[in-house]
Length: 314
Ligand code: RRO
Image (tube, rainbow, N blue to C red; front, side, top):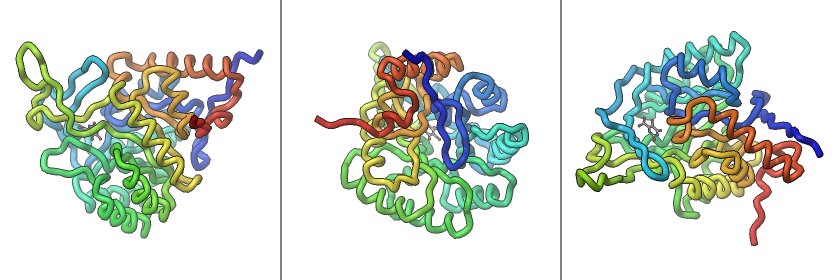
């Protein structure tokens, strides 16, 4: 019996040795953290979502582990767009193409400004437009406003011809998948990434009878095991509706090889680990990838394409 499988993935001719990346936001704010991801066996690295200007983010405590995951209201702390654009360009010069530059402008105009700057730069890699940050006080998640999504795509594709993906919030109604897919299918998107954290959850500390994070009176995005079924449903629902040319990155509730297998079975091309990457650090990539390979070998699958999107219904 074969004891190895091929875990390679390529998206628009950009190659990844394996499908397991970090999710934007966790341990990826500084170049030191990004270097550590690239030095590990991760398939690639995603940068912390950037705004044009550097931001300190929300007041602390702003992230808390929970029994089955995490809650956060980081509020987009980042070193500013130029810092991350420089980093991915330098990596590209060094021969590393397995990066994703994540941007999350505070307005549509700010997102378009960053996309224009990327278009004018030498960067040729993947760009992830985060339409789903739940944690900036007073700002709605653009991903829940389908007219705004349509407007930003229409404007972006008048000038942008790079590899653009969207980070989407979770959806909970099947009509939302129909409506949004009809919009997304009109554009040459490279991928969608589902899901961001489930926005505006709330956790309680029994002893103190308080919320567990300070910003937004305790409301924050939920990640980890709590969100895996929602993530799988979003991946599956989009895979059944989006043009095959639009790839899918699965994010949400991944901490084992089995979780990765399930995401890919539902249709994911790449996957990203957020909550579980926090405490475990970069060794998680080798562990999870080894576990995935063990499952594939046991099932006789030689490549990810052997089972990608092949979820059966009963
Ligand atoms: O920084 C954050 O508070 C944050 C962002 Br931008 C996001 O997209 N998702 C999240 O859970 N937190």
